[in-house]
Image (cartoon, rainbow, N blue to C red; front, top):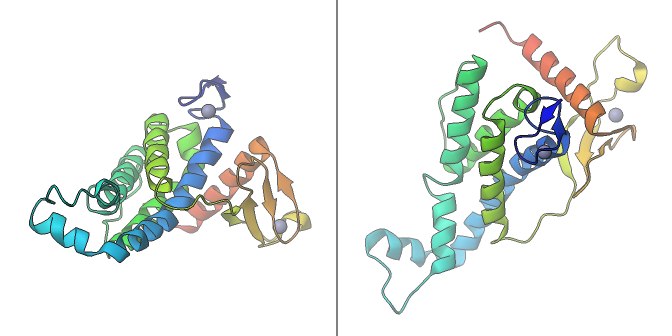
Length: 215
Ligand SMILES: [Zn+2]
Ligand SMILES: [Zn+2]
């Protein structure tokens, strides 16, 4: 056990499990927050033109909209997530997929790409603490502008791998309640505490990696 890079509690690697779960939840939330921020901008879409063509005059200070533009524009959420994803792929020795498509799609793919390696981040990635801190800052900045999300977060699918304990062959949705640390399957009702969830998470990631041809 070593100290968590974020909160200094005991951690099995770089991050303690509550901090890793929080990072995972932030990564799930960010694409939704990104979409919500876009909607937040729409009613005053002339703000974008004004900021794009000339500095807003003294009669039109738009501090909130400007904040939001910083988050949703190039250099905001999308760039932070893609930069971390690229660093992670390089450190883990996995090929880095070039970003493509529109900004919301890039945010979605970058967040999902990081989430796919949550166990690696928690246990092995030296940059885990810095990445989790920056993602938390983005999340905090984005939630200031949109209603707080208190739905449960979907964290994965209960693996339906053949030949295992039949209780494990499920395929149900795995949810983390808002503010909770116990993951629950919505189909078979199995629950996992933080450490059990880490073990399951690693199995899911290993299964996914084993499916792919070696790079
Ligand atoms: Zn921690
Ligand atoms: Zn299940």
